[in-house]
Image (cartoon, rainbow, N blue to C red; front, side, top):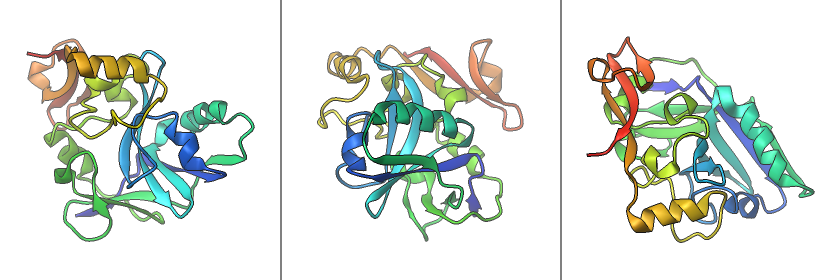
Length: 217
């Protein structure tokens, strides 16, 4: 099965030292091998945006939630200051997914998610959402929240979404402290809709599943 992920958009960063620019902002290391899954956090270490970062020559591509793409462009532009960097949605590109090996690379969060790549748009098909949730992988503002959930509560360690050796970024201090003290008391989980209760973050009645934020056992 191969499909275009129509709920995703691609942001292009181009210009002077875009890797250095992003390196000081997000949770993962973009100076080495890409793609990586990363977050842009509040100063308190809570998730604002999650995305995958890809290389395209000297440019960087951000594979993000389509409904939040313009908000992410605006947020990144605040940090740009006077740097000669362009940050904009690239409408000529789309994110593609296949459950089987072929094009692209394994998803950096979990190889079981399948293969992913960026190319020109094509027709979308179903299957990605059910596959992602079946593996317990969470993403996007509906599931992670908008500045309400600490990054390590978003399974960032388990899904390879944070580097503890890369140096400073927004929200790094609290994130590193939680990691070293093992103080992650709550987390996001994919559960049966019948077990979700009133505190469900996101519900998917057609799949009988929900994402909840709850205390870890």
